Structure formats: C-alpha cells, structure tokens
Amino acid sequence: MDDDAREAIGTVLAAIGGILERGGVCSTEELANTLGGVAVMTRDAGSQYHNRAAYIGSWAIMVKAAAEGPPQIN
Image (cartoon, rainbow, N blue to C red; front, side, top):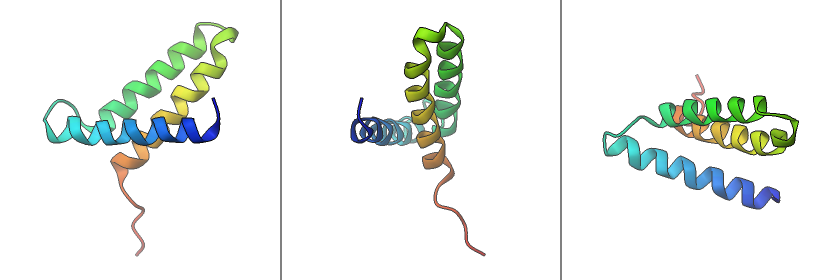
C-alpha cells in the first residue's frame, strides 16, 4: 500500500470516529485504542503479519491524533 492510500484510510477512520462519537456509540479515543489493540494482536500473530500490523498501528495513531485535536499553544 502506498503512503497516500494509508493516509486516506487513516483520515476516513478518523472521520468515522467522529461520527461514532457524535452518535454516542463510542468515543474517537476508544476507536483509536481499539485499533491499537488490533495492531498489537496482529503483530503478535506472527512475522508474516508485521506489515499489516504497522498499517493498523499507523491508523490508530491518526485516529488518536484526531481525538486529541490540534496541539494547544500557550
């Protein structure tokens, strides 16, 4: 998967997180944490899944960043 596709999927997941949060299903942070857990489980499933785990982990980080919002400058 190229970087543009990876970034696009992360962006869509962040948007879905916002929709789920507004709908009261789960918080965007909860979605990020779930994706992070899936990344760890995928990595632990075997070396043949390490690339897949890296993609999922990067999506978890993108969703977490969306949940936290822009950095606050004091």
